[in-house]
Structures are given as C-alpha cells and as structure tokens.
Length: 72
Length: 172
Image 1: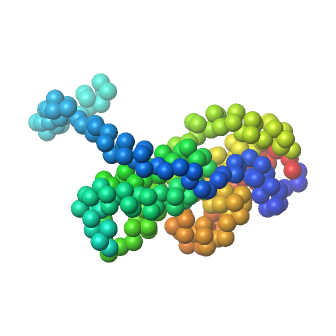
Image 2: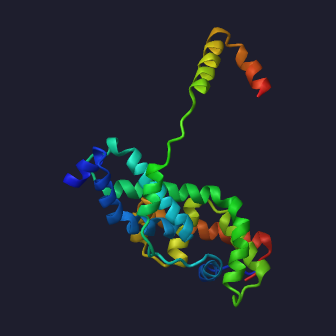
C-alpha cells in the first residue's frame, strides 16, 4: 500500500475537520450575568454531618475502610 | 491597573468592563481549539466564571490576558478530552454540512475517527497547523508551548494519523 504523504494527510484533514468562524457574533455578557446571579449549589449541613461521622468512624476503626469499599 | 484592582476587590462593573474588553479574544482562542461556536461560547463564559471566582488570587501586576489565556486553553483542551462521546452526533452534522465532498461518507467517518483518537494536544496542534494553516509561532502562543514542541506535536499527529489510516485500510 502506498503511504500517505504529508500533503495528503493535510487534504484529508481539511475534508473532515470543520472550518470555523473565529469572530464572536454576539455579546456574551447577559449569559455571564445569569451565571453570576445563579444560586450557588451548596452541600446541605446533613451531608457534611454524614461525612464527618464517616470520617470519625474510619479514624476509630480503620479496618472499616474494607467494609466500606465492599459495600460501595 | 486601577481596573484590575477594582476587579480583584470584587467590583462587578470592573469585571464587566474586563469581560467586554476580552470576550471576543477569549472566544477566538477557544473556538480555534474546540471548533464549535456554541461550545466556545459556553467555555468563554466558563473561563470568565473561573476568573471571577479566583479574582482574589490574581496578581494585579501580572498579565490579565496571559492568565485568561491559560484558563481558556486548559478548558478547551479538557473539552476535547471529554468530547469523544459527542463525536457520534457530530458525524451526522458533518455529513449534512458537506454534501458535495469528494470523500465518501464511510471514508470520511474513518478519517474522522482516526483524528478524534489522537491525543487532544496533537489534535489541536494539527488542526491549527494543517487545517487553519496558522504560523507555528501563533500556535505556540495559543497553546502555551514552545514552537519546537508544536512542530513535534504536528509531526507526531501526522505520523499517528498515517498509521491509523493504513490500519483502517483507508487508501490514498
């Protein structure tokens, strides 16, 4: 089989990779503002409590890690 | 400098001014890598969101543009890394966009598959060098790597692509 030359590879890439317009066509600030004003997602206090309890349990009985991994 | 200090202190108007000054440039950096205007718009907003979140750590003596470019570039490369699943969808779009293409659909799919399998950094370097035909220095600035590294990436991309196409039985 004849191998591909560099120019052939370039030609093929131009066929399959889409050309793109590099210019931004509209202002993105409204979208940015929505993002800034979106309510922050936060971890509820009971999730932190659970994580804390889990951490304490693993400190007190490190062998629990294996049980935890088994059940995950 | 005053503007950057105000931005660092959390002044939304200063942030808006910076955003409006830089949005087109940030978009341009990103769209050249991700090749999808919609995704590039989302990633531009994500870039500025991260800039806004990290504003307290920004050194006002440093270059805002270089900082923004680093964040934008990392997001764009990460996007390419995670895009593989979306590739199937783009297949359909491509076949609609180029009905007169000289390549048959099956061959085009193979070539695109081979291209998408390249590591993201090789993909972006090859796209900019071979499809957009950008000067190497410009690509190096955009991708944040020395010119020599970019040349190597393009060379490796072509070599890997050639091997993949030959394995797939796509003949010149």
